[in-house]
Length: 306
Length: 275
Image (cartoon, rainbow over all chains, first blue to last red; front, side, top):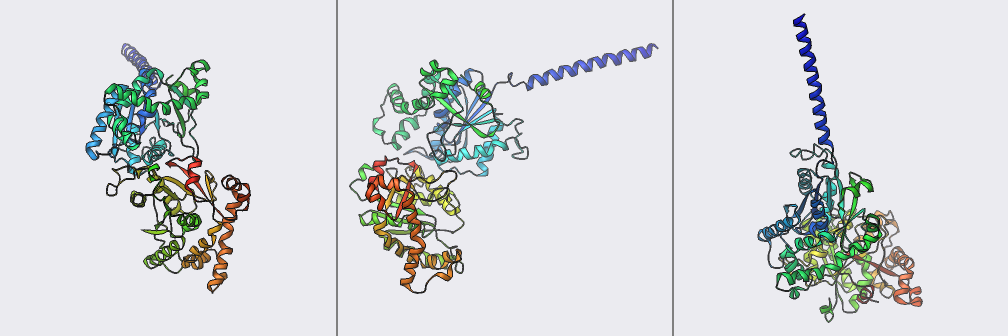
């Protein structure tokens, strides 16, 4: 009897323990599955070291403030972007500039090291992009549209789109664990009309972090003060002093960057209210790609910083 | 381009095959050439698949000769590159050949296919030309040929494809005064206009034997297409030539500005094109 009692009570006790343990495990798993608890992970994939910064640095900085983890990727190493420098030496210089820029924004940075000006939408590039998105465990992926002016931008747009379903397929790049949830894919804004113009689904007012965005671009000395002015025929006009040239850069770039808020004022007013929107000077807009996870406008606006 | 004002304008037309530039823009090329503009007609492929009986190097050799004769009639220069017909891909190798050709010609204006044309060689020609539109200026790309110091204006030939977007001309040229030259430039491409293309269309039997009859037959075969161009874009013709002249234009060639490359105003663009 006693013996049986003990066995029974031991059995009951272990049953209770098992149940408790199971409940504990369930709550642990639930906590892990609740995305709100985990920081949002964003990867911005540009063709060159400075593209993601130019198009998305403000949003990146705001996301970082809100606790999101952001990585900026340059698919090419930028080794053709200079009038008198080139190759590995230029690629290293641009990597150093990009890391400095990333530090200002509080983001991570990497390059996939393909040659600048020679990007083709090959399997090799696509796989490198799939792995990068998986390694960052991205919830949101942002890249170029495939009708931007630079072939490297267009083919970056293409391979990122190619990755939009494949990141979830275990048999593709089996060396890197697949993503269990397809991220949302978005495009940076651009001004091209054919075959269809950019139409933003979300817009972010970035005035609050604009100083940081300017400084992140300013850090790309080889581009902002050497190559850019050379290819656009204003090489002799760049001032020497650090402060003066930053002011010069702002003057040069402002009309372009200011146009983004102006062009999409309706969406800005919808998201921020008319009054607040009217005061916005700098904004960054993004269009949802039809591939990848499809988010409602409400969900999308909730995920993006405000 | 402002510094180019004093020098003759330089135009390069890049087609997929030896006969494409001639077909889409031979009239405009002839009008330009008559005004002292330097025009080069380029074919990216050597045309070595464009025949039902001949092929390979032998056919390519024949087409190179025919293209040279045709260009001569129009007053243009001819360049046939050596990629295989029917096998063109938008590869780096092809893109670089295009970058070098545009630089070597020191082109102010580059004209090619839209990327939505029916023939894969046309589509990929368009793609590599668009890929070249910025890179012709970049010294680190093809450093063996000096970069252009200006960005040319890039334009597309007319086509009738609708998806994803139809062709929309930004400039149109009345080619009536040189239509005879244009038809004679086709006549020079015998293996195409009298052999391969009629064979493909199942009308080989209708090709006449004598030269004079052949020329008449060519007019019947080809003139209608350019009449349609004139009829389709009467508004643009009236805007450029005035209502009266515009309404009387019988044959026209239209071109659409590409969003990549230099972006001239409509006024500047119309100034560049012959009238």
